[in-house]
Every structure is written in C-alpha cells, then in structure tokens.
Length: 371
Ligand code: THG
Image 1 (cartoon, helix red, strand yellow):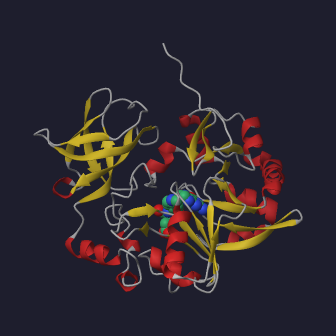
Image 2 (image 1 turned 90 degrees about the horizontal axis):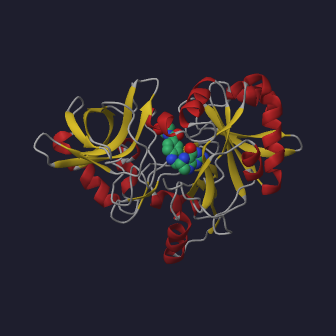
Image 3 (image 1 turned 180 degrees about the vertical axis):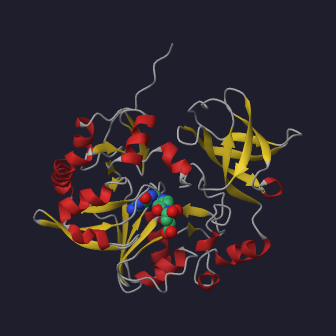
C-alpha cells in the first residue's frame, strides 16, 4: 500500500491570516486555490456536513482573494467584464457575476462587492483574474488602479450563523439582507460583512481587512460561539453539490459559456453591448447552448472520491456528457453529482450511464439544486 503523498509547503503556496488557528482546530486536508491554502476537511466529509447543516462553522476562505478596482473608470470596466447588468446595483450590494473572455468563455465566477461607482472588490474564484483586468485597463487606457488588497474573507456558515453574529456585532445584523453588505464593529476594528457564502445553510462573510486582525476575529467568534457548538469548517463537497453551487475549474472552465453553466439569468440582453464577448453570448442565448449543467443522481453505493471527469454515456455507449463533481449524500440517500450534458440528452428524468472509476452506474438527469 502506498501512502497518500503530502503537499509540500513553500512560500508559493500562501498561508492565510487564519492558518495557525485552522491548524490548532485539527485541519486534516487542504487544497490550493488562488495559490493559497484552502482547508477541505476537519473531522470527516460526512461529519463536517452534518455539523454544517445543524450548527455553525467558521471557514477560512481567505483564498477568495479580492481584486480591487478603484478609480473613475471602475464602473465601466466592471460592466465590460460581465454580461450581468450592473446598472441598478447599489453601493451596499454584492452580485454573483459570470466573467467572460472575448469568446464568451468563463474566466471566473466571482462575487462583485460594490462600495461605490468608483470602488469595487471582485471576490474571485480560482483563476488569475487580476492579470486579465489589468491588461484590459492598460489596453483601453482606463483611469483605474487594480491591485490585490490585504483583505481575507472569513465565512460564518450554518443555521446558527445569525445568532452567533448577533452575539459578536449586535442584533442589527439580523436585518442585513441576502447579498447586502455593511460595516460592523469587532472589538476596536470595523469590517465589511455581507450575508453570503459558499453554502446553502445561510451565513455571512467577514472581509477581514489587515492580516494582523485575523486571529482576533477568529477568537471572538469561537468565544461567542461556544453555546452554538461552533466549529472550524470549510466548503463541503456534499453540501455544495446538493445545493447546486458550481465550482470554477471543476464544473466549468474557459471552454464553457455562462449559459452552459446555468447562468443565463445573469446574461442580460441590456448589458451585452458593453460586455466583451457579449456578441457571442447574444447568439448563444438566441440559439440555445449545445450542453448544460445538470444535477445527476448516480445509483449504487458511495462513489469513490477521485479526480474526474467521468464520462456520461447513452444506451448505445456514445459519450453525451461528463460528471465533474460527485459525492454520497447521506440526507438524499444517493450519490449526487454535477455535470455537463449534451442538449439531446439533458431532459429531466433522462436515464443515462456514468463511467465511475469503479464501474458503470445507472444515473438520472435531474434539477440543480437537488430537491
Ligand atoms: N464568497 C465570496 N467569494 C467567492 C465565493 C463566495 N469567490 C469564489 C467563489 N465563492 C465564487 N463562486 C460562487 C458561487 C455561488 C455563489 C457565490 C460564489 C452564490 N450563489 C447563490 C446561489 O447560487 O444560490 C446566489 C447567487 C445570486 O443570486 O446572486 O452565493 O462564496 N465572497
């Protein structure tokens, strides 16, 4: 039996303002995201999952790096990178935005945090969006500064997250709406907090501005959270598949359009003219995509956890798509998965076969999120 290889640490794989605490809380697994550590496992995938759905967890999601766009041309630069219409966005809003290249291919699917017309944070998924945006600004001769500030999101996720946050920053946080942000006081520091996060259990993200404050905020949350059974946690594969939260680099890449990714609701005809690649997306919106993201219910016992993608085949053995994320769901009592399925085969209820690493399995095309 060979041992699981370790991932060697070095300065190129950045630690976070919370890494010391995460270690103390017994992190068992990491991945690398934006060249930074992202915890993947504490107790076990299933124990972490049950705890997340019942209590509250603190997540080190510092790897959701911010790209700050600052200056008079910020608003027009922002509208040029996404087909989502930002025209009515308020200064206290966050928007989930597809970011596309000149061919309409997905470059990233960040959360845009608007401070003002001339100041934005782009809270990025795992790709080097800073270089694309800097290149655009230089090429277009725009009057903007683009840089990565020392800002690290800390997630507070789970059904008891509101009670915990109310203990720490006051009852007023209960009035914060989904995808809105406001500044709250933590000890003697003010930080922006949004009601958002990469789970469907409800929660908040604290944008910790200044690495030196990381452990202080962490400790405040754990002190106040004892009565809510707070634990260290992380984005959970099972929960995110159930909830239909797609993952850049896993479920979609630059090969895919936002329409294929199920994000047509964020591809606005009114914004296409200002968006790079908008012409391509307009045509695709009219003609329909050639494939689309779906939920896939995979039969049998728990699928092995293993690098995908796994081919999806029809009754004749022809490849009609691929599974890109899969896990056993204790609550649904089946394997849940996310994948791309060709247009002739994407109808809900369609029976297909998935070539999992252990064996072929019967599977059913279904909705995302799982219901
Ligand atoms: N929070 C912040 N930054 C992030 C993530 C995050 N950057 C990387 C990654 N996650 C980006 N991907 C997503 C994917 C989905 C959502 C957020 C970020 C999400 N979607 C909601 C949904 O699908 O129900 C709401 C979308 C909407 O209506 O606007 O929350 O998690 N800071």
